[in-house]
Each structure stands twice: as C-alpha cells, then as structure tokens.
Amino acid sequence: MDIDSYLTGYADGEGCFCVSFNRSRRHRFGWEIRPSFSISQNGDRAEVLRLFHTRFGCGAIRPDRSDRTVKYETRCINDLVERVIPHFEQHPLLSGKREDFQRFARICRMMYARDHLRPEGFQVIVRLAAQVNGGKRKYPRETIKL
Picture 1: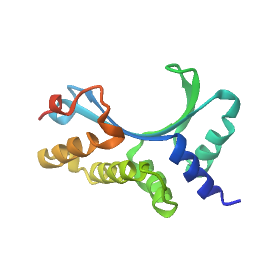
Picture 2: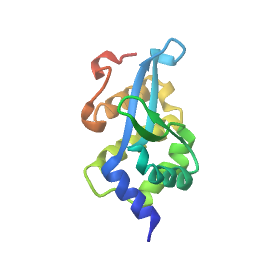
Picture 3: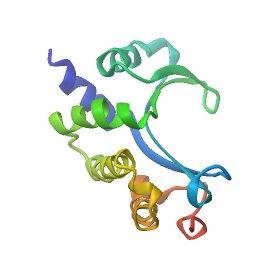
Picture 4: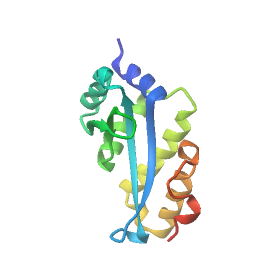
C-alpha cells in the first residue's frame, strides 16, 4: 500500500487547511496570522492520526474539546512549508480542497519569507485567507485591517 497516497486521500476527506486571525497587541498590524493543518477523528480510530504524526514528523495529537474527537494538528510555519506542503504537492489532493490547499501553501510560503510583516504582503494574505474554506471566519475580512 502507498501510505502517502492513503494519507492524501484521507486528508482530502477529513483534513482542514485553515488560516485564522487573532487580535494581538504584540504582532505587527495588530493581528496574529495562524495557519494550520489538522485532521479530527473519533478516539477509537486515532491510529490514522498517528500515521500523519509519524509521517510528517511534526505537530501534535490532542483531544478536541469542541466535538469530543481527537485532533492531529501542526501550526509551525517551518514544518508546514518544509514537511506538510511538499507532501501534498507530491501527492496532490483530488477534490476541490486542492484550491484551498494552494492558497494555504501560498500564505505559508509568504509567511516563511516574512512577507506578512510588510503591509502589502499582509493584505495579500488577508485576501487569500478569506477564500480558504469558503471564507468562514471568526473575524470577517473587512475587520482585519492594518
């Protein structure tokens, strides 16, 4: 069995590429940008989460109190750019989630290059993030300003 293709297929159905924003006085422009890749699963099926954790060599598995599942998640920009994104580029998603992934990858690479610290880069990230996962946000795009 090709484990990498299996993991991609699993993520295509159950994974989430997310970019969230949190108000922050200690971050430039007053917002912290937090990209993450995660997968939730019922606790009795957590072995697949351990496969992701082992394969990527990063992130953590933890209980998700919001829905009583277990979640594998990685948020470290270096790990996202150096481990997670290359996996999904070498083993592409097949659903419409691929477009979310492409925007997510661009955002992560911009942050890796520190573009989010410049006003123009920050604005591009806000615009792209508003298109990831159908634009569902705690803070609507209009509220995230420089």
